[in-house]
Image (cartoon, rainbow, N blue to C red; front, side, top):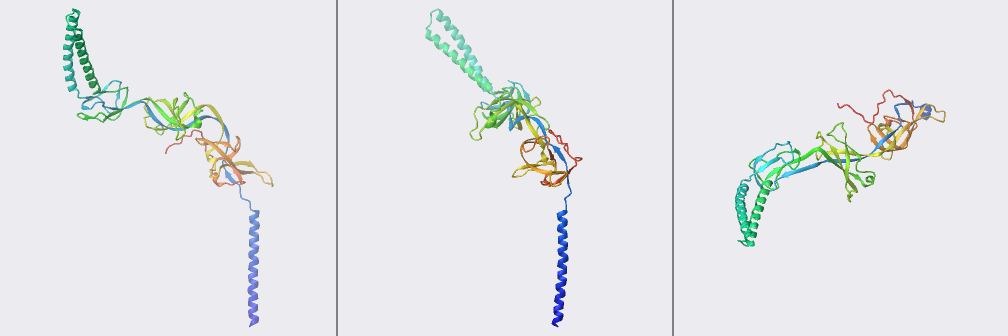
Length: 374
C-alpha cells in the first residue's frame, strides 16, 4: 500500500516537473522573441521650420467711444408741444428736435416789449430836456437804468424760450426717442442720444513696460466680431499722461474713419499698435507643438546614428514659444530655420522612435487661414 502511494507521488512530481520545464522553455522563448522584436517605423507628416520677418504689434482689448456724443435733456421743465424728429434720424447742427410750451414766456415778452417801447420814448424825451438844461441829470440816469433793466428782463425771457427749444448741438445720428407729445418733461429727463459716427475713437490700455515703444501717429489696427474678415486701420492720437496706479497701465486713444457706421460706441474690439521695427522669427505649425505644463516641445526628425541603426528617428526638443498667427507659432528658442519637425499628431510619438515620412495627407498651413463656415 505504501509502495503504491510513493509511486503515485513520484508520478505527480515527474508530471509537474515536466510541465514546469515546458512552461519555462515557452517563457524563455517569448523573452528571446521580445528582445529581438523591433517596432516598425511610425508614419509621420512633417514640416520645415521657416524664417520670416513679422511686424511688431502690441495687442490689447479696446472699446469704441464717440468723437462727439451726448444725451439730450431739457434744461428747464416744460410741457412737450412739438416733436420734430424720429428715432434713428440724421440731423444737422442747430436743428430743432423738441419744442416745450413757451406761451407764458411769449406773453411776458410782449408785455416787456411794450414797457421797453415806453421806457425808450421817455428816455429820449428826458435826453432832449437834459440837452436844454430843463431837467436834472439824475432823472436821466433813472430813465436810462429803467430802460436797461427792461432790456435785461427781455434777454432773460428770450434765454428761457431758447432753453425750451431743444436743438441738436452738432450733426449726427439720433438714438431712440424717449419723449411724447403732452409729456411734462423734467430738467433731467432723457430726450434721445446723439452720436457722431462718421469717425470714432477706440480706447485701450497698454502695460507700462510697452508704453516706451509707442508714439502718437503710429498705425492702429482693430478687428471685431462685428467686422467678420475685416481689419480697420486708424491712427494713435493721444496717450494718457498718467499711468493707472492700480493696474500700472496707460490708456491710449486712436481715431478711425467710420463712413459705413459699422463701429458703434460701446462695442468691444481687438486693437493692435503697429511698431515701425520688424522682427525676424522662426515659424513652425502650431499643431507641431506638444503643449505640456512643465514645458512645450516639438519632435525634430533626424538621421539615426550609432549602433548600426539606420533611417530616421525622432528627437524631442523643448522650445520657448512666442506669438501665434494663423496656423503658425513663433519659436524663440529650441528650433532653427530649416530643421524638420513632426507637423501633426505629436501626442502619439516618443523620443528616439523610428519613423517614415509621408506627407501625402499633410494639411496646408497658412498665416491667414480662411476656413469655410459650414
